[in-house]
Length: 168
Image 1 (tube, helix red, strand yellow):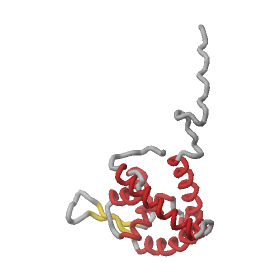
Image 2 (image 1 turned 135 degrees about the vertical axis):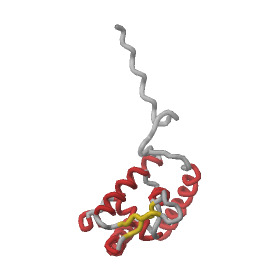
Image 3 (image 1 turned 90 degrees about the vertical axis):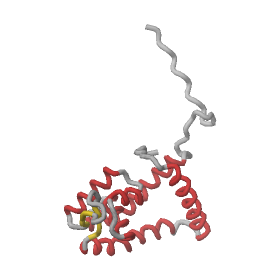
Image 4 (image 1 turned 120 degrees about the horizontal axis):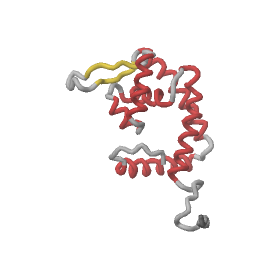
């Protein structure tokens, strides 16, 4: 059998080449994972929370009672991840789930008193990590970063109306 020679690899400046170190979705994904791990160190050991559990509690703590679908929308986590987080939070008595009186097919989630107490303890910890991370930037850089993030959030919010479970 005759072997077929391998195609040469494209040069980095060719349009078909993907320079991951400069590819925005990849960079944001890696950065988000690193930041999540840094923040998670502030609450995971003391409060035995995973990142999805904390995100769920953070949304409920900030906005109040809501459906799991609303948690999905506010966190951009997939439904399965939210469902698993809610199940663990329910099992540990950190959230409640009650039937929506206006639509009995829906369930409303809320923090329990224990969940609120944990939320109140975790918030200063995660804000401290954020201050430390942002402390590496000048005031001008922090302002520019905030503006850039707002623009990217706006343009991606309009594009992400359908389900997408891709990583980048």
